[in-house]
Length: 252
Image (cartoon, rainbow, N blue to C red; front, side):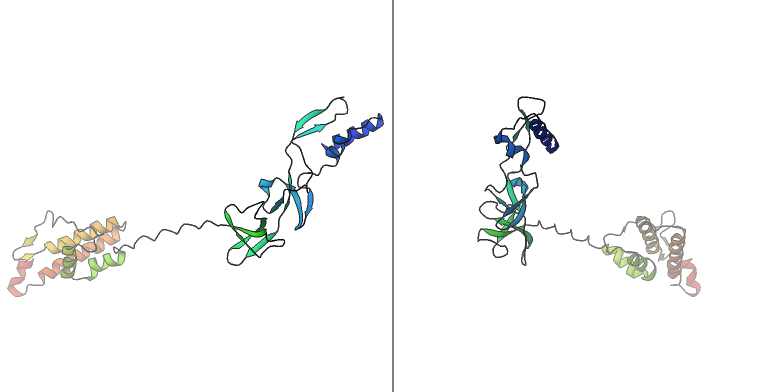
């Protein structure tokens, strides 16, 4: 754009013509976007007011740039208009820091405001109208509480299945605690629940507990199956061992 303007000026000068003075300063000497400007509080750049993070001055520190810029083409005898949006005000950015609030920018209370933030006095140069604007930082939502830990752990399973006595296991089964374990059973299935005077039902119930909960926990494999079956056999032997002498056949 500037090259075209300069070429036009040189061409007109060669022809002995002149550009009307009302356009000369406006076209050739206009301050460019982001061009430097000076204000009482410091050096800034010409910016659109809405884009200025610091102080903007409504006074004419930046040349008045109309939206319709008139251009004198070298090969025409009339003006063409092209649309261009140019900045209007001088923007000076001065950072500031408020110990209790954080970092921000110095802004004019009257001219700029502090949208989405709070003004703090005493942290910026200039008159009392210039204050530090610190934007409010939205608080991150609190993380959700961790889910309660399940009491149905591997350790709890192993204790009920392999360490506790059959009577302790049956007390837990009667109370169904922890409730997260599967306490259902189908007795001794195809085998009789008792032989003579002695009952093998409790041993069968613990055997069902072992299978069902190991599957629910994703732990059921050949090794654990063998351990559950061996524990079942030990529980059955414990019933048989309650007999002695001629009575022992009742536990077989």
